[in-house]
Length: 197
Image 1 (cartoon, rainbow, N blue to C red):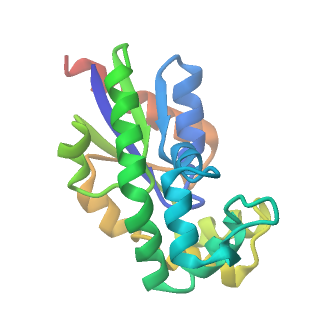
Image 2 (cartoon, rainbow, N blue to C red):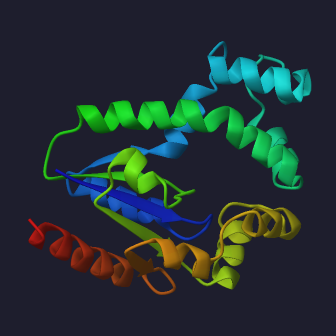
Image 3 (tube, helix red, strand yellow):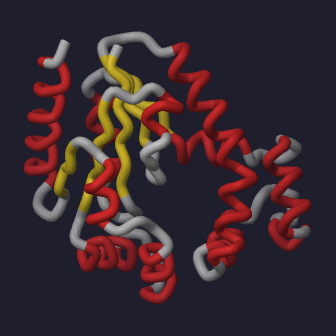
């Protein structure tokens, strides 16, 4: 079974790719979904975040206030490092468990923060990245997700840029055009992936 990482910055269209993969019958393990699960109330990562950031990080119902936390970490690099240090181990353990339980010809891991060491850690055969021009990403974040421009720019600046991401993956799927064009690139990538058997 092939294991493939699918990376991509915010607003790049990674979800469009992983949704299409799911519709084609492939298992998609989503690191963002897992990240939300590991910080549910009472979980070890929830306790660690509360201890690190204080009760201000909690909603009145004692859930993690994701908007507040995002506002903090995307404007403070040290806070982002602290968040990642707390959560990444828990997220990695869940990803490994889901990969170990997977079956089929290929499994895909939506991993926005892909790094070279993830190849060995998760046993990836390939790493792909969905990329978009930063101006288009900014437009998508402000018009489709309703972020204000300063917030969107802070989030984009906190991430790896396109050149850095392209240097560490095997394939880039550009999403500057239509969805049909993106899906055409995805079909080509899948054909080549399955031809390698």
